[in-house]
Image 1 (spheres, rainbow, N blue to C red):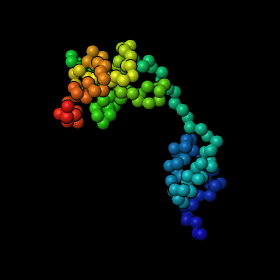
Image 2: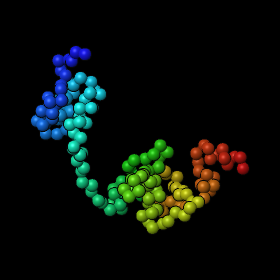
Image 3: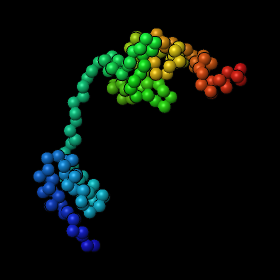
Image 4: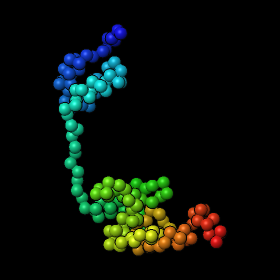
Length: 159
C-alpha cells in the first residue's frame, strides 16, 4: 500500500504532540492524517497517559439554584429553565444524578412530603408553575378526572 504524502508516522506525530500546548491544538494539526480510524488509534496511543482536566464544580445551595430558574409573577411562579415535552419543568438534583420535575422539587423545598400513591396537581392548570400554593396532592384518578387534555376528557365520558 502506498502511503499518501500527508501520512504521518508515529515519530512525526509524537514530535508534533510535544510541540502542542493542548489536545485540541494537536487535533487541529492532526486532521490531515490518513483516515479517521488511523487518527483515533494514534491519538489514543499518544494521549493514553493523560487524563482530561476536570473543572471545579460550584456547590451552590439547591434553593439558590432552584429559584434562579423561577420567574415570579402575581399569579404563578413560572419555570423558565428546561421543560420536558409535556411542558413540566425539569430540575437537576446533583446527589440523585437525574432530573426531577420542578413542581415536585418545589414541594420538597417547602417541606411538603409526597406520599406514595399521590401525584401533584396544578390548581392553576399551568404546567410550568412551581408555586407551592398552586400545587396540591391528589390521587392519579382525581388528577385524571380534573385534567383538561383530550385523553382525560375521553376517560370522563366513559364513566
